[in-house]
Image 1 (cartoon, rainbow, N blue to C red):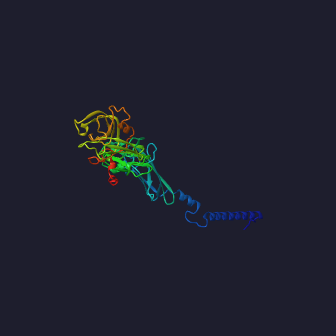
Image 2 (tube, one colour):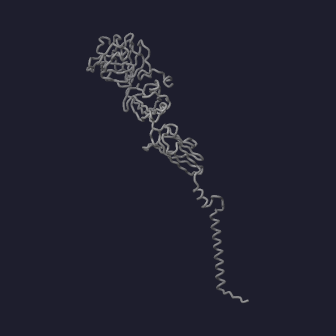
Image 3 (cartoon, rainbow, N blue to C red):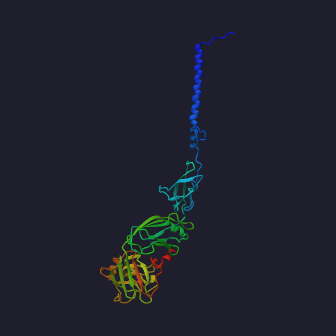
Length: 408
């Protein structure tokens, strides 16, 4: 057998290739050892970490009503919840971009709005939840609330931007009788500066008044969020207004009429500023006792006995300086026909009369002075009359109720 001799150069080349192979193998082993970090556990290498970060969140967000829904109820229908995770963000906006207030529960499982929604409005919902590993999931929805077939309004007093006396409540008269009073109460939010507890009281099913325990403090600023839009006041009947009303409490003026002495003492900010002679209701027509609030001022008005059940007894077409104290027709007003009654005896049909002149042109008369120095919301207290206390519902006269009864 012929054997080909191997040259020295060939041997050298083979040895270099073998050495190169050993070196390359060592590098592979070395790199594998560095990548493993010595642990080799699941998810510990670079490839494992990337896989974990790329996995979807296990948290699931649910939004009711479903996206695209229409005719959605304005109260109780909107709910956002999370399973296998916690809600971290919920943003609800109306079509104008205004946010809907709401809160996430302590355990992060749910969110609900803090008030009802408006009717006939499209809302968008954006919700974010995180699972236990901090991975987020999001969900968006869009829906439209119902457009009611029947609606109601709330007619309120005092007017926005007005300054009123210390006895003026915030009063709302509803155009339809209310059978869901709790929903209405929650939709009227009152803030005061300085803060004071303000409570509401229903007179029948169509009037709701709010006041503090005692007369307002002078200078108090009152802001009312009258959020009736979307409130179901009775079955199938919804409110259709949302308005912010602000008013200020002016100086404190309380006038006390003593029916037995035929006098009125006017006190402002704790100081007596005027004593005026008056005449009140004659026997059989006695003036109500109690606290009454000026609710209307008329420079001149007609007073006809037929409107208050005294048909044919009087019809005076030009009563000057008239200020309403009750819905039933009690006024403090100028009187130019009373002769010597003022300060001496009672001669009216239940009103508080002050001396005046026909036409009310004389600004120096007691009636003119009292009219010019009074504002809506001032208090007139009548005592020592031979009549019972005025009904709290007869005018803005809820001050004749105890605080406990008012809050019932």
